[in-house]
Length: 283
Length: 283
Image (cartoon, rainbow over all chains, first blue to last red; front, side, top):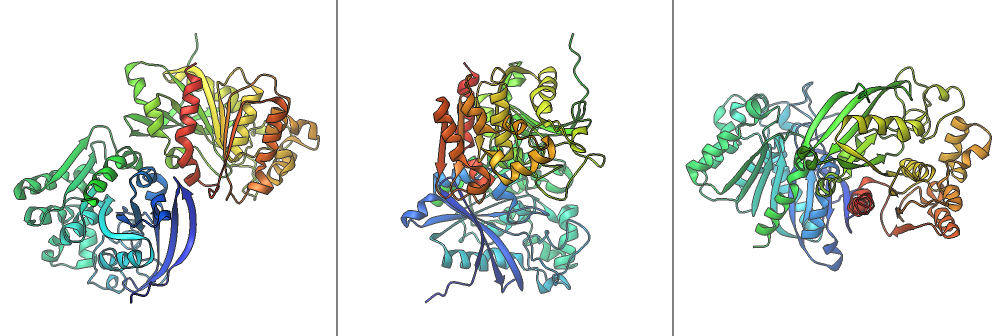
C-alpha cells in the first residue's frame, strides 16, 4: 500500500474548466519546504487518469511563471494533459544562496550538487526525476505517462533529464534551452559550484554531449528565437544540432526570426509543444 | 497637419507574428510620465489599419498584467485587433498617493479628480478617453474603430467610459467589474477622495446608474465568476442586471460557477470577448 505524502493546498483557481492549484510540502530530497503548481484538466472530474507534462522553468523563476504567462492551460484543457511546474531550486533562510541571479536559490540547474555548501539542499535532479513524480502520481488522478519541457535553464533540465531517463518520458521539448552548458558562462559557473572541478561530471548534464552519445531516443522538439539576447554566448543551439546529426537523434529544432527569450515567445509556440507531447503521450 | 506626440519605445517582444511594445511619454492630461503597452497584430506589417481594443486593468495593476497573463495575443493576432493597455493611474514621486492599495497610485478609478491633492494628476478619465487614443491613432497603423474592456476597477472604467461616450466605442465588455461603485466600499472610498462629498457627481461614474438611464446603447458583454471573493461586497453584478432590464440594454451577463477574480478566470474567457469585439468592430 502506497501512502500519499503530506502536501498542503495553498491556492486554487478554476481555468478552462479545470483547476490550477499550488501545493507546499516538505521535500525529503531537498531537505526543505517546497511549493509546486499543477494544472488538472476538466477530464479528471470524470475519473479519467491523465498524463503529465512536467515543466521546468528558467533562472529566477518559481512555480508561478509558466502557469501565469505561457497561455498553456487552454490547450492542456483541450488535450487532457496535466501540467506540473516545480520551483527552480530549494528555498529558505537555511538554504545556501549567492548574490548572483544565476547561482543558488532560483538557479538549481536540475543537478545533484556534490560540493559544499550546495550539497545539503541542491538536489533538483533527484527531486524532479523521483520525488516529485512519486508525489504527483500518489496524490492526483494521473497516469504514469510523462513528458517534460522547459525554458532556458529549464530547457537544459528537461532535455538532460529525459535523455538520462529515456524510459520515464515519452517526449521532451524545450524553449531557448542552454544546449551546451559546459561551454557557456551560466553552465560553467553553476557546474563549478555544484559539481566541482572535475569536468567529466559536467558532461553528464550537458544536453549536446548526451544527445551526441544517445542510443535510446526520446522524441525532441526545440524552439529558439533569433532575437534572444542569450543566443550566442549562453544557449548555443548549433551545438545541439551538430550532436543530433551525429547520433541521428529525432530532434525538431526550429529557429524563429525576431523572437526573444521571454514568455511572449513561449506563449506563441506552446500550443505546438503541447500537441507534440499529446501525440507521444497517447502512444 | 497632425504632429505625432513624442513617445519613447522602452521594450518590444515578438509574439504570434505581431509585436508587443511598451512606450513611455509625458502625459499633458496627467501631468507626469506614463507608460502604456500595445500589441500590434501581424496584419499591420502589410500596411493594413487595424481597430483597437483598449484594456483597463484593475487595482494595483500596470500596463503589464494583461499583456503577460491574459493569453489574449493569440486571438488578437488571428482577428487582426490591436490591444492598448494603459497604466491604472498617474505615477511618480511627485504624484499624490495613499497607503491603501485601493486609493492613489495604481487606483485611478478612471475618473477626473476634482479634490485636492488628487486633482493635480488623477485625470484618468480624460487620459483614456482623449489623450491616449490621440497618441495611438497619430502614431500607429490603426483605424479610428475602438472597443473597450477591463477587469474589476478597469471593468468599471470600461463600462462607464463607453456609456459616457457611446459614439466612440463600437462595443464594451468587462470581467468582474465594479458594477455599482456608489454602493461598494472600493467605490465609496475612491469617489469620496477623488470627487468629494456630492454624491450626484458619483452617479455619473456608476455603471449601473448609467445603464439604467442609457438611451444610446453600446453592445455589452460581462463575465463574472461566482467564486470571486469580491462578488457580494464590491462587484454587485445584480445591480447591473436590474439596470439593463430597466433600459432594455443589450447586456450579455454570464455568471460562472467556480471561477475567481484572477487572470486564470480572464484567460479562460478572453477569446470570447475578443471575438465579440471583433464582430462589432467590423460592422
